[in-house]
Length: 217
Image 1 (spheres, helix red, strand yellow):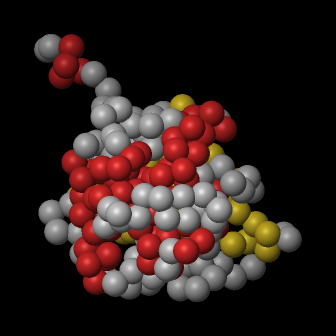
Image 2 (spheres, one colour):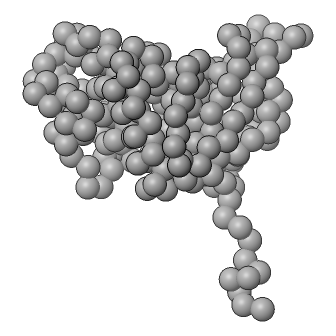
């Protein structure tokens, strides 16, 4: 038998084992067991209060898990491994209002690195912000600010996108843009965890669903 036939399968990009989070001794979610592989999107469904946003913040390293563990490519998640693997698009988009669109993206690339072959002007054009390169972020509408955050996703090299309500404040073309960008990211070998209260059209994108239920102490 050839070595290829006996080799172990590649570890999931991210795996959660018994993961849970409590706030003020009250359980918010968990324990959860799930994984995300390269090339797929996992949709997180759940009612208000089921912990969708909190889960993404734990996976992004912004909140410490109360129990369980997170593995990245089979290894325990450290701050450095999370920073190099995950990028979060949350309700707070992180733009600096007194910086231009280009300056905000340059700042993000300085913090998190820039994906090889990517270009700031091209990213802005892709999300529909061509011509707004020198506009201040504080002058943008809510939809334009979301598009600026999507441009940042195109530039940073993190393979796992953690997207919390990425369709909020977007019109129908904007929603289609999000789906198109996710599809492109997955085709390049990336992955995405997505929360959404609305419809999610994935087309041919490989998709699974993670159901969260509000925890009762």
